[in-house]
Image 1 (cartoon, helix red, strand yellow):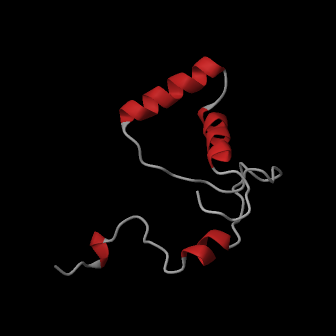
Image 2: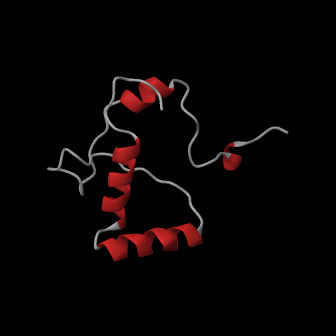
Amino acid sequence: MKRNDADKKFAARPSAPDDWVKQANRPSKRCQGNANYTARLTVDITPELRGRIKIAAFQRGITVAEMLRDLLARKYPESSGEPQ
């Protein structure tokens, strides 16, 4: 089945993922002045999972963003380039 432009998804897969990841990103206005947070990541999750994440963050006294940044930083630390 042939697709037309109206059927395109929100974003397409990059043809060269390494180049795409390494490309320079402009920080959002929210992140300007804070070099640690210069890119936005959108992930589709179920409403139930979103609720569990929000509750966990609230119970820890931190924001969802802070909690997820810490989680991702622990799971994907700066390393020697070895895939995990």
